[in-house]
Image (cartoon, rainbow, N blue to C red; front, side):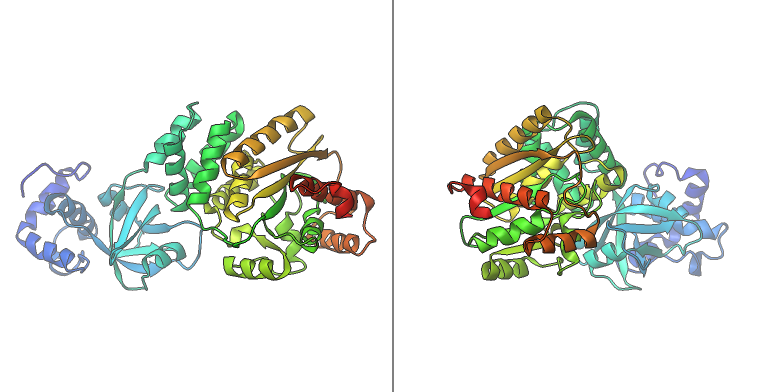
Length: 439
């Protein structure tokens, strides 16, 4: 064999490879034919044969340009992102460590998975989770090709963002695409979220993230206009106004496909409350059918592929109780459902996400500008956020209280707030005396 040995193989590896040089073509044919190289068999009589298979994987990969194949076994769980487990010696031979990336291919399909390393796994085996199995369409016992995958460019963009650089449209698009494709690790995604929380997003960055989130997901096409929507930035316990606003607007003849998140920084999100009363895991076609039939619908955005990058970011934000991607998160979901007119509730007060009216005004300006660039008309309301809305907090209690309010016996502050927000949206649509019309 010619050429320098692969880094990390060591002199013993070179000697062992030379010992089996007569078998190199046999090994190459085995790999090329999709048959994993067995450390036993013809190599079993050689010294240190447990590690020899791994040595040959690296040596043949370097010298003969052969891609190793490993036999699939299921881990049996979903982790939310592609994940594989290989033996520690296989990992060393491939030049990867825990949390590095491995390119896994089969039959023209490929996926980049994060690597976990274990001891005493069979040398010819790779454990895959449900995300990898689904992406490749493999079943247990089938062979997949593996190779180290370099870090995506977006990893460098995130590092630059952490160090203080501003992100351009191309950098943001690359980051969002890699988030959607699960090419970023939880550590990298957490770094992005924390850096955004510490420094904040510019209007341009918020717009770039919003646009990229929409473009990398699916869209709801209702074929009607106007399409209205209402959203609260959250953070106030008991704020169940969406459960009132949606039926109020639908009763007035407007179309409102309300997609909502689960709890991020409060006891319950709108999707959590609504799920007490009805299914919220709806498909786009189900949402379309319901909205065109009844005028309104409440669905969990995480069950859809509307701005899927946002749902992955929320998974990091939730345990940290921070929400730095608030503007792109909301604007992307609204644009993805085709909203033309949106009213946004910004609670202000101690314990709320926004502490002062001045901060609320700054946030409102960002919402309005990002919305304008996305083709939407936005109205923002700074509301009282020092205390809960109504008397109940928690999904079931809030759902019951919302039903009572719709029946005319709910807390006055809840009814007043819902009517005020709906009224502001009606005025944005050109209806005078909006609150009175809502009531």
